[in-house]
Amino acid sequence: MKSYRILLVDDSIEEIKTMVSIFETFLPDCITYQTNNPIMVLDIAKEVHADLIITDWDMPGMSGLDLIDHLKRDNDTKDIPVIVVTGVMLTADSLNRALGSGAVDYIRKPIEPIELIARTKSALLTKSYYEQIVNHKDQEITESSLFLVKNHEFISRVSKRIEKIKDIIDINPEKAKKELITVRNEIERSGNEDSWYRFNLSFSRVYKEFDRNLITKHPNLTQTDVRLCSFIRLGMSNKEIALVLNQSTDSVKVTKYRLRKKILYESDISFENYLKQF
Image (cartoon, rainbow, N blue to C red; front, side, top):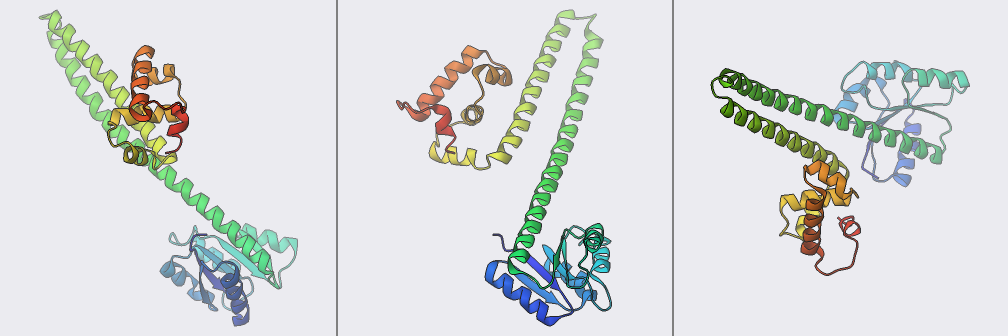
């Protein structure tokens, strides 16, 4: 398990010692920090970059639920999951209050080691999934922004060229026709490049080491070879690959045959299965 940082908050030093002992026994890779002063939690959580906070409910100066509200109002700590521990507030209504305040879970005292570890793992796993989703969304937004800028620049260039073609279409129709064909080809090429770039970004997220491992094993491969290997790795048909590459199906068949010979020589192994090793 990853070395997570867990902040324990309880006005009882004995309760903190109990939890520390449990974590040292069952989750030794996790780092625990402790405080018996809830007023200090915000500063400590920021300083140690806490991944999880486990707090007592009934504490002098600030209750566990007040502490959660304090954490949620600060941008640096609002996403830290909090588990509430209590030996006093034991009813179902208390559970609802804790969860309604923003706690991700609730543990009754006396603390059972297995329950503490299970609920801690669940909270950390949920946090990990949440961070992955947020990072993925941030990456998608960045990529989309880059595409918007790139497409705007391309459209602007094409528009200027079309304006120039309009000026010569009556004077020199043959030249205008050639210019239009050139513009059409550039649009098709740009579309193919953008499609490949988007595909490659998505493919790389799922199969992060594919390109590197494949080239390490077969250093004579070109980028075009690696691109085709990516399509084959996904099990795409010749027709599907032909549509993506804007080629004929026969051309794709020939290219695949040559690439297979280049990588597998005379082997009888399935090309697709072989590529799944990377």
